[in-house]
Image (cartoon, rainbow, N blue to C red; front, side, top):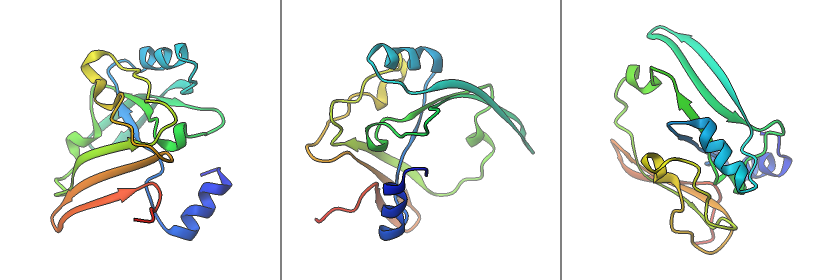
Amino acid sequence: MEDPALTARVARDGPQLIHWVARVPDVRAAAASLAAQGIDRGEVIQASRATPGGLLQWQITVRADGQRLFDGCLPTLIQWGDTHPAASMPESGVTLQSLDPSGTPTPLPCAAPATARAWCNPPVKPGPARLSALLQTPKGPITLHSRKTSS
């Protein structure tokens, strides 16, 4: 969190969604598609980490300036290697029911091939950019937001 305004907002309002990551089948093609639309999602870097379940490998977009685009509503892009980390995680009882990036200045550009377009061009509601996630938990549904609202 190198953004002073974001840091101040989190200090004032408490924890909140600030960004998200979208899995795509070809991160280089997805980043190139965004670049063709004038959006710099960042350099594609390769990363890995040893885990008790084996080596995790991935490619991910990283902006040199660390900026979140569209106020965090445009995701960082990731392409997992042969092993996805969720494969070795214990069941938590929490599932993502929906993710709503809304109020972006323009519809989110679609950077993924047709097989991975779920994050592309969701219905955009008027207003400031905001990210909302609905989670189903063992204690019932909860909604997280990137900003507090007056309603």
